[in-house]
Image (cartoon, rainbow, N blue to C red; front, side):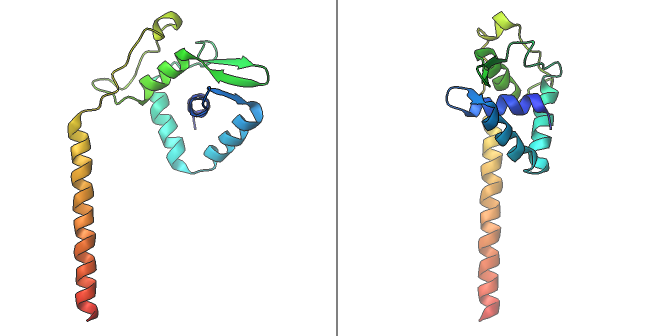
Length: 138
């Protein structure tokens, strides 16, 4: 599990981006014990920004007993979560540049259409299996 990516994700989930240490620790413990899915997801996200350092890059700031994600932190998290096009690694923008950076979070439509098609096919297979089961039961 990548600690820094997890911190960014947790803080971004709070309405104002601020969490006291007790809440942050509780959420980290929940995610750490939730299984391999979370660990694999954070590894994938961390691989997109290999030089991630949330404190020295100003992505998270310490405020009165807790941590708060900055606008730069949200921008880097958005960059990590967008689907990569040509290269999988993303350069972390400089502190002054990241506020002006506007990532394009629009995934290609074909992927959504493929997912919808697979979903329809699964539904159809389940329906056919139910019909066969009913026919065999009678």
